Length: 186
Image 1 (cartoon, rainbow, N blue to C red):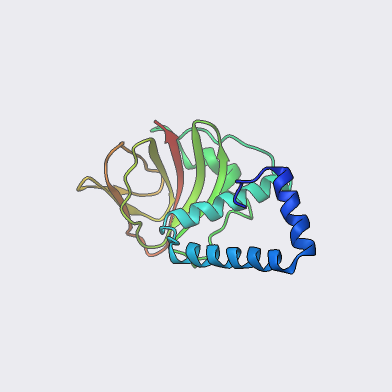
Image 2 (spheres, rainbow, N blue to C red; image 1 turned 90 degrees about the horizontal axis):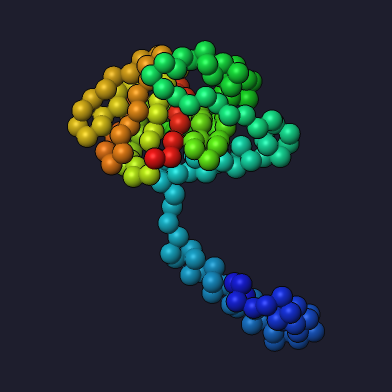
């Protein structure tokens, strides 16, 4: 009942449904109506939300299976690709080349989420009000357009997106641009 009944009331309804076909039919009709309503009002996830959601599920499953919790170093202007070798050299951190944006989370803290991200072509425009986005290019190249200004990035380059600035990443290499990405709380 969508959380509107107490545990005792829910148990009572389940008992009634077990013995009364009319109650079972009514519950089924309510469930069907709610599914039709949900489907009619569903919103497809954006092209950036979906890969991060799938990456979060993947990361959670990896932790459940015993992957040790790690805290990748915070990206800064002195960061080097070698600082992330422990994650970059793992056999399970690979891009299969199917999606435009593919993400593998490598760690999280209260301050930041760290991921390896592959971008095949271009990202949709984003705007962040509560987190900084930091990039360290591992492979490939890209242009990041921030508020109309183009920043060209090549392997080893670091860049931070300022708050409240619309930005787009456009891949300029023949292969997907592989990036260490951090979203850091503002």
